[in-house]
Length: 188
Image 1: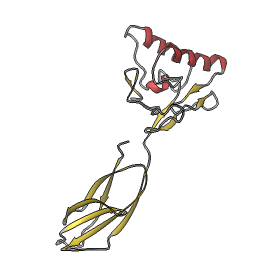
Image 2: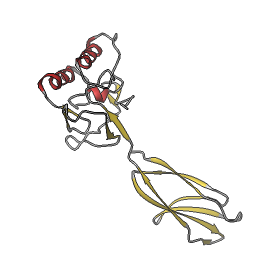
Image 3: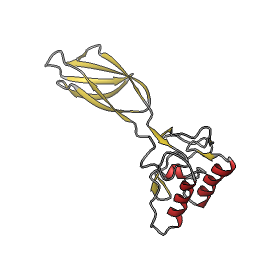
Image 4: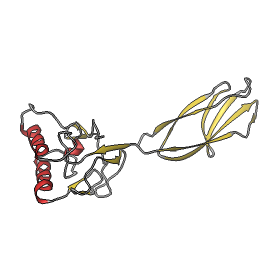
């Protein structure tokens, strides 16, 4: 996972610092010119404490701590909602079949993972059959995290964008699903 940008800003008390140091624990993350008042760092999800210190000559100040929490990026999916109308019905199975067998005349799903009803990271007739089973036989679909989706729990649900499926070790959202972006337009 590439991480998220964290911007730290401060006010310098003196204009004659030789450098500004930014540390995370013992790790030096950045050395900046003495007149710097901001730095952008990349951080993984979780809690981080940064210390910003002014350096004058060979002496560094004790520094000021700043704590931040980086949230994990989420992608929301409404499983089975192939046509993005905020519900799962026969029109979704028909939309998927039209896309698969319509010779390029029917639109692609805007969130391919919503159409990937069996969570195998590809779109095929098995997904349309899974949606029909969900609608008419109370069969569960599989979410990006491989959990079971039933009528009782199917809503627009956020999943960790960088999550790894414990069932098969594959990412929740691969770069592509059958040549389409995994979820170009998440549900709202």
